[in-house]
Length: 176
Image (cartoon, rainbow, N blue to C red; front, side, top):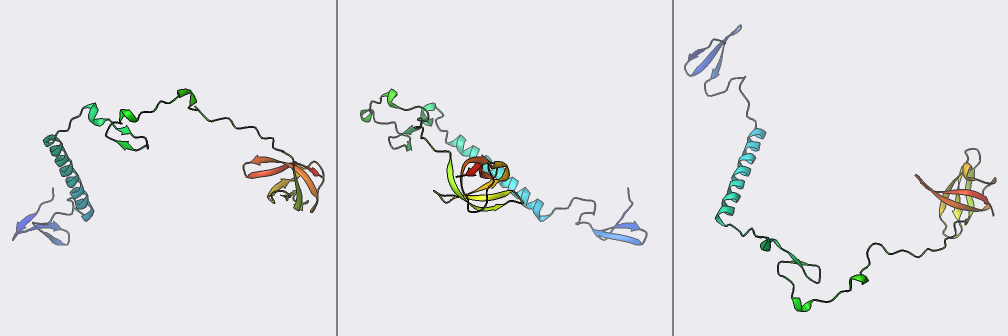
């Protein structure tokens, strides 16, 4: 322990350079520092604790009936949640067999998988290009691996589409 001298309300600590003093009401350097943020956090914790105690006290002062009947909610004919039960005279008879369960099946439409288009751009040295479909005017990417015949720009071609991770690609491309 470091020796100190108490005199005139000050604490004097001996150091190599002489005596070092601190007023008695200030904390020493080794003590914890209370910052603004710490004080604010402590205030929030205290407020939260007091609010919780108030809520508990009001619940004890005004006990509500915890029976299941007080917790029941009803849905009216418009889909709104209410606390009043529905009027039994407005009840309608529903045939359970008429309610469809699941997703109804779609009619299978015959979709032509072969499409017609015009080669908008094709780079033979790099091996890719774009085909513009004649019906929808959509452009689709084509790679040399998807070709059945050699193609060049402005050729009319037939092709099929295949989904890849980058989008729809034209495959099985041949001249029309």
